[in-house]
Amino acid sequence: MALTKDRTQITVSDGALIPGKDERATFSAWRISFFGAIALLIILPIVSPKPYWEIIKFVPDGVAQTFEVTVLSILIALVIGLLTGLGRISRITIVNRIATVYVEVIRGIPLLVQLFYIYFALGAVIQLPRLAAAVIAMSICYGAYMGEIFRAGIQSISRGQMEAALALGLTRGQALRRIILPQAFRVILPPVGNEFIALLKDSSLVSILAVSDLLRRGREYASTTFRYFESYTVVALVYLVMTLFFSKLVGIMEDRLERRR
Image 1 (cartoon, rainbow, N blue to C red):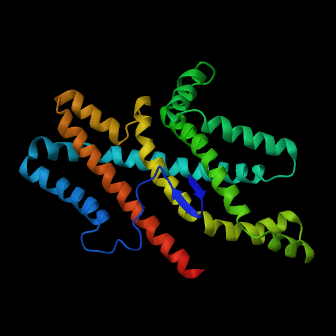
Image 2 (cartoon, helix red, strand yellow):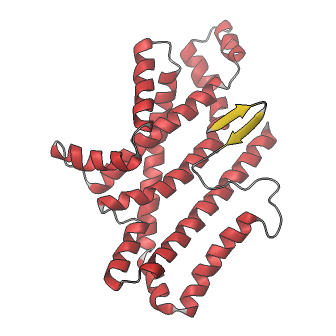
């Protein structure tokens, strides 16, 4: 979300803090957080093998499930987002209204409620597997946000380029596919990266559907051993390492895109 007033821009994101260009110091906030979390994940099992080492051996399949949900959801959300973004700028009134209503409705309902609705409420009509319900709910939710990203990215391209393409004999569809969208994709890559990080964190909500993600595996270990502090400490550290790692990748991607401009 960006608010602009008197040429001052305030950016707020659901993702992890993206390392800036000025954070190249040896003891930057990102380095302290990332390597501190890794150090704790190494030191804790050495100092106290039971239960920390047992927990670390217990959760890897949960990490894999978390990535599976995240990657599938973001891929489907990108497709939904592209269609929604095109619908939001469409000159066809009904298409524009459908896309706009979809964005407003989905963004107005919490993701947790959408998960419950798709798995439990719609379960009376069609019973979906837990993983499928989780991916569908997260794809629909983030598709709305992706739609706004695509819309903003497309509209950021100068109108003159569309007019020039039409003057050369291209149709609006051809101009959109060959000229506008390739440029828009470069513009939206950083915010899409931020949404991926936010989705990675929100994937912890799928544990309520008994999907064996990272959080679910941590809860299972804690419920059988009553080691709640240790279990959730490891889960939190693993999530922190993952989100900080991908935030760094997004930061590198943004730097490279700026150099190419």
